[in-house]
Amino acid sequence: MRHISDLEAGISVELVDLFCGCGGLSLGAHNAGFETALAVDSDSNLRSAYRRNFVGRSVAGFDLQKVAGEALRARLRTRKLTGVIGGPPCQGFSVMGRSQKDDPRNTLVSKFLEIAISLEPAFFVMENVPGFLSDRHSALREAALSQIPQKYKIVGPVKLNAADYGAATNRERVVLIGYDPDYLDELSLSDLENAKLDRPRVTVGEALSGLVASKANTATDVGFDWVRLDRRCERSDYATSLHPSAPCRYLSKTARRLYSEGYVTGFQPTEHAPQTIKRFSETEPGKQETVSRYYRLAWDRTAPTLRAGTGSDRGSYQAARPIHPEEPRVITVREAARLQGFPDWFMFHPTKWHSHRMIGNSVSPIFAEAIMRVIASKLDMNENPHGKTYKVGRSADARASLALDVAGAK
Image 1 (tube, rainbow, N blue to C red):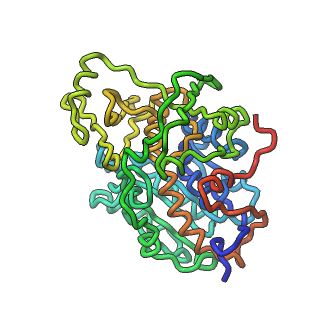
Image 2 (image 1 turned 135 degrees about the vertical axis):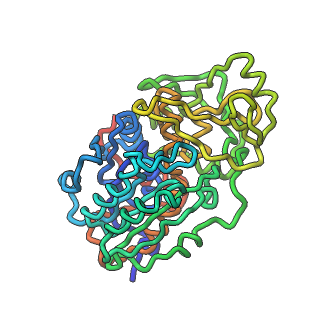
Image 3 (image 1 turned 135 degrees about the horizontal axis):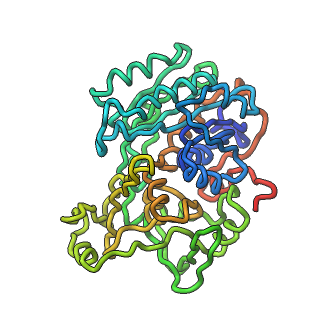
């Protein structure tokens, strides 16, 4: 059988991304050779970031708790959907939060599976937090999994760590994969284990290398402040992979031009009171600050899990942001993005609060790409129903150029 990984030219395999957020899972999927046909999220701020980074992709603002799969199918042009991916809200399962059994968001796992199954994809991938596997949620978990038809083979749910796949953050997540053996070769937990990198985990120092702003040359576009990076600074291999020479062609023409000229967003620092600066300065790397309990990053360690805080419907609480390993301040949006595995061209939101919430809620694109590449290697091209072709990216620059060019992007 022929597979995506064996061909110079692949098939345009289309996905639906449910609870898409700012697009971390979609980005990883695109880097692995897939294409998003439809992305869905009820949060308008999250959708704005998705649209900004995936210009021309179809994005819908459905409340998935109230929508049936037929409404999504009506938005699709393809006869046979290749995959459904998504990360249903995890706050009700999170051990960092209240982990409430009766949190209404917990039912969205079942809703994700219900919609995914109704779309009859060749496979589906669901991501959530480790708390999903806890005993207190066993009844909900079993009820959700019981609705999966027997035609789908199931891998997981299994706990994996994004750091083992190349991200610079120690971020454990649960992954559940269902696949139709008529379309995919056999997929197992060992395939996911074998995709882990046989190298030391990426450190904070590697992740943040080269993120030094030039003192001159700033620009403004669509509410974002753009700062030119100091090109004299060296970058690690990890940092270089997240700073491709050409930006993704999903971006607007203006954003692409600014990035190609050396500009990036997300450099706005957070202003702290003098007493806070003093406490931050006295906190050792790898330790928590005594009052705020903020963790101070260490150059030679992997970053801890970045947290999201809550939306306006849950009190708009700001999550604790790590302290920079050397400077007496919390990290910037761009530094958080590097730790999570987003490329430097990726844009979030003009405000720091929304941007950090997007990053903390996202799936690491590096982790997502690793999982999606395993799935891509199992696809049976003889059975795949799609017709468009494009090159599957092999390098950082090739991955950055993988997306189809959007004619007329402004």
